[in-house]
Image (cartoon, rainbow, N blue to C red):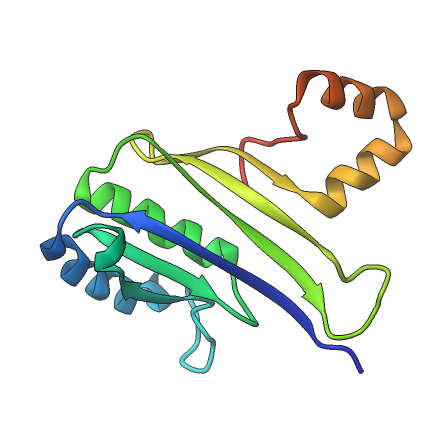
Length: 152
């Protein structure tokens, strides 16, 4: 039997050490916001990372991360702390054994000020689309733009 993993590591700057403390309350309330049962894992860990700045939060997961939970948390922080600018992160999909459907990853780009996803990419779906329509692959290669969507 193979084990499938989703891993990531990123920094979110919430502006101040005071906001870092408040963010612990946000992450504590997040399971209820996501309608998770008591036994469901939040899908990421959060720690203050003062080496990256007074307001830096280190968000990470391994081996069973949930990128959608990170996105929900970041959007709540953007609203609470009035964050602006672009923020994003990448994740890896891996497996304990070689499986054809077990490797890939993705990335999410969020406009914190607008509180919405700007673009995202999922490697598996991107590849499948481009294998079906080689013209899309050629366009993406020449423009340097990956297949993106408005919502995750």
